[in-house]
Image (cartoon, rainbow, N blue to C red; front, side, top):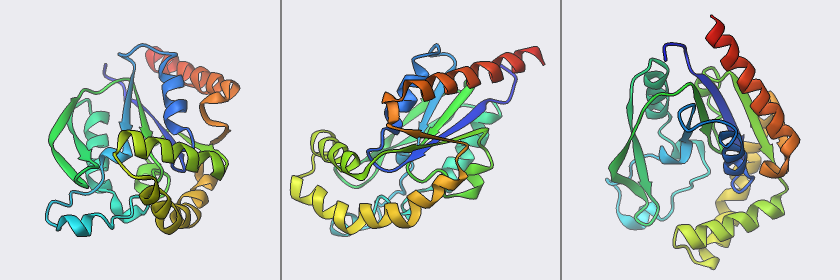
Length: 211
């Protein structure tokens, strides 16, 4: 592979269905074609802070992310170099000592709630997608995910939603919708939108091979 990878941004609020959209697109291609980079792997390391302070982290705020490292890694992948993707441990609220070796591929899908908030990330994207889902569905999905996958209590998830998630969504995430090339309602259930995305990617890959 010697062509610049196609970079696709998939944004949207927490629980909007970004992962479902990304998975549906990936299912149309081979594992050798598409690489997924999740922004929430790039939360800032907080090992220098006491655990009590880490509990107050607003994971829906732009300052929670280490976008400098994310941008550095994207540039490496676009230059055909492998990276060591960080891993975030939500149980201790800081970055894990583990990393994941990631090799470059023809298509990079960058998925995250605030990827359209940073102009530096937007400039790297060939296609920008915003997954638009009603707030009631998003909070239900977040409840299920955080309790099952992140060991959270019901009360803590609701408290976080009221104090951090909802205000941050209205202030930081929802406004980035205007930067999207494509807005997908209903997330991964919107098969028409998924078909359009897959066709667009196929066309770009075909043109790249012709060059």
